[in-house]
Each structure stands twice: as structure tokens, then as C-alpha cells.
Amino acid sequence: MDVQEFESQYRDAMSETLDELQSAMLMLAQVQRKISEIGNSVQSLSQSVEDFIQVQKPE
Image 1: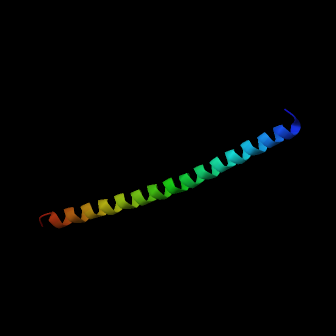
Image 2: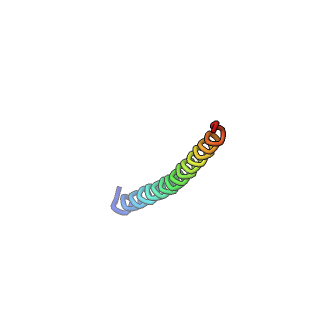
Image 3: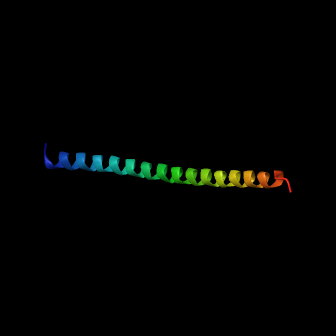
């Protein structure tokens, strides 16, 4: 293997690795957004249950 082949293989591998890193970062952002959405849903559901319990309590 000569220097040019080595450089070409290095550049290809680096490009592929950076593409994979970018894909992982995008997936991470999607997961973070989904976790936030789920958290908001849990809070909303919890508030609805609390409101229902308060209405159902005898005075």
C-alpha cells in the first residue's frame, strides 16, 4: 500500500465515521424530544388524575 492508497482509505473511513456520528446525533435529538413529550404527557395525566380525585372526594 502506498501513501496515496493509505490517504484515500483514511479519508473514506473518516467520512463514513463522521456520517455515522451525525446520524447518531440526529437520533439522540429525536430521543431527547420524545422523552420530553412523554414527560409532558405523564405530567398532564397526573394532573388529570389529581383533579378527578379532588372532584370525587366527599365534602
